[in-house]
Structure formats: structure tokens, C-alpha cells
Image (cartoon, rainbow, N blue to C red):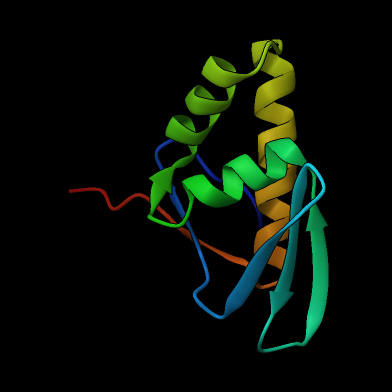
Length: 99
């Protein structure tokens, strides 16, 4: 998968996944693949954010606002998580449409 998003691209969670609280994070089941995934607290926060389409910039901003983290580290970690979700069929990336 070619992963080269901009902060204006939109990410949304798939609807074919079931999530439940698991410790401080979430356990996710992809209903299409029947594979379980686990997310830590930050990952769970991002999963909740992308239940409705959000831009990558908005997701990064929300994480920065909620957690005490360096902006560059936040960008790298959010990008890595979203890439993993997309590669595992848990999220969809939609590139910004130029008008």
C-alpha cells in the first residue's frame, strides 16, 4: 500500500469492526477477516475520533491537545497507527479532493 497522506486527507473507521473496552485500550475484531487487534489508550482515543471521517491534521491536533507529547513525535506516531489501521482493513484513507 502506498502510504503518503497529507494532513488534509481524511481517515474513517470501517463499519465492519466491533470494539470493546480492554484494560486502558480497546480490542477490535475485523468482522471481514475475523482477526483481533488491540489498541492502547491513545489508539482507542484515535479509534473513537475516526468513527466519523476526520482529517489527519484534526486527529493530530486532538492527540496533541489531549496528551503531553512532542508535535513531531505525535505526527510520526499518529501516521504509523493510521497506516497500520489502513493496511489491516480497519480504516479508510480518502485523499483530499482538489477543487
